[in-house]
Length: 184
Length: 155
Image (cartoon, rainbow over all chains, first blue to last red; front, side, top):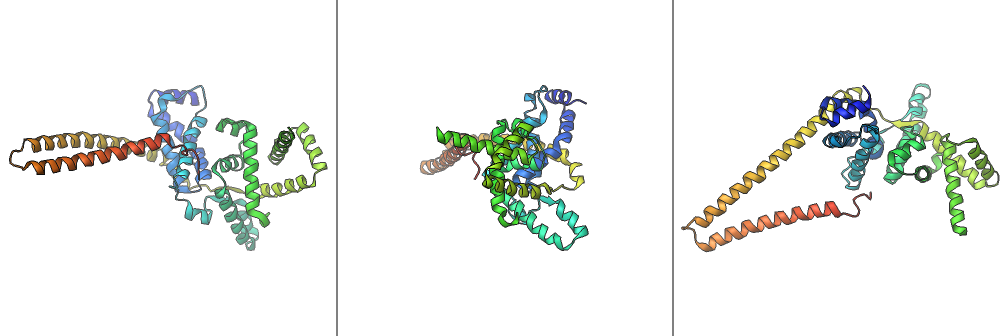
């Protein structure tokens, strides 16, 4: 069923239609939160909370616009407030960098086991450095690197000009490169 | 004027670097970047450094949770909302019933002819004090929530 139809039904109080919207977007919502807060538990909580808030506000759904950018606005606000309030449970997970996975390490573990420890260390440093970035820089980096969005899509999602996306991305990469130093 | 020009040029160079890393350069922009790189070894070094970073991050991805997480995802979110509604109803009930009980207590206290007036005054003052404190804390929290200038700033 078309998303606009689901949104129209959800707006009219059809919980089943809203449930279908959730099923279509839950993975993306979860990963958006995970990239921002760096903790599986927090990402799960926050993404579910975003959907419950979206359901409560479903009378304001506009079927002429895509659902995800509207949801992302809710998600983003929740995640940034969550980080600001210091409620994050990510501290111990940041140490393990558990939210990030290194595909090169996974490949190396089959062909060159000795290299896996080196890649584990690198993954940990990358994860820690990403978590240390200011959230608005981290957000753009995650959307580009992990979600693979184009600049235009990121700009639309965040409702900022493409130039702002690129300047945030530059700042993020510069910060990350500085943090990784000799690892590069 | 010169400062503005330098800043604009710097911003443009950074944009081109980002576009180059992410394969978003048009042929014209590629030529523009090539020209900039041709006479700027510092920029070349920066491009290489950011290029190495890109190779590192290209291998990283967000860890995928267990697939069964998605089976109960919506049910769990829906239950959370139901619990929220439940809490609102319970809170409403506590306020209404608690308010009524307080009113009964106060009217009976005032009507009680056996209790010394000083004790009555003490109990009423204490009760009123608790109500004022609760209202004050609640009002302050609401005020801070609405007017906090730093609420969108992340530490």
